[in-house]
Image (cartoon, rainbow, N blue to C red; front, side, top):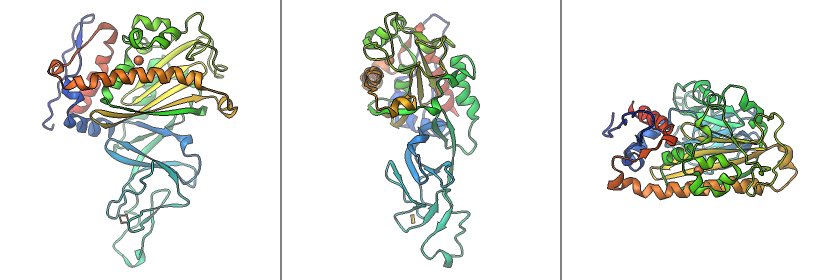
Length: 380
Ligand code: FES
Ligand code: FE
């Protein structure tokens, strides 16, 4: 344990107010460092859509747990991930966020060259350097999984079970393993991507997403479409429950007008409903009948978080070139309202008034589980 003191608040009886994390957990760079090491370097982290890298040689760089990770599609079309660090003297191999190479990755410093599978394949004068074992000097591999059309990486030497820490969370929220398949998220196509820079700690963003106590105050458009949200209970409060569209609402759009055909697998039980899923530590999945909104968060500093948000539609919707802006606008507005609220809280986290933290009201009690998960994760 470092010098950071991790406080685990005492659980109070149901119905009463329970404490949040203390303010310092949202402002102290030492806590942030611990979270990077003990959460973001240990858990499965969603970093991109597989379709972002459609061709062999396509790459993407992402920041995970304080490391730069390079995701690249090989000539065999498989995706692989590596630490973005040259094994010679440590230069960053790729500095662009996205790009493509032909057959290999060449370090710009002394031209060590790696295959798309990470193997060291060439270096100036390599044949005369008998000490350099090509087999041992390849790029350091990072574990990678593809699920829901999403690329997930894990920096741990022994990654936790993907089934238990990711898939079971989605199944637990929806009630069973199969329901998520109704949206066929892996086959959907990005209709719009918006990247937000939020001047707030990543945990404020998760905690905000988990509750709907704020919905009546800050989300007028959303509560118009989902009237039950005005009661303050979030969609993820009950297993298997999706918030129902209002009677006069035709679709999940900014003005409640009809959206697109519901996705093929969505049955009557799941039609006209909104489901929200939080996968710790950095994914939010929002399911509505005709599209999916998928958030990936990247904590960059204790008070700064990048949120990449994809609006995913059936391929024929995107291919047709039809205007998706009415459905994009609804959740874009929700995002802006939520992130404004998080930015409003961030400066107060260092106030004397918040040194011992705040409180969770009964409709926010499930945030206490996230708080305990974070506290336990950084404690060892
Ligand atoms: Fe990459 Fe020297 S640091 S080739
Ligand atoms: Fe919200």
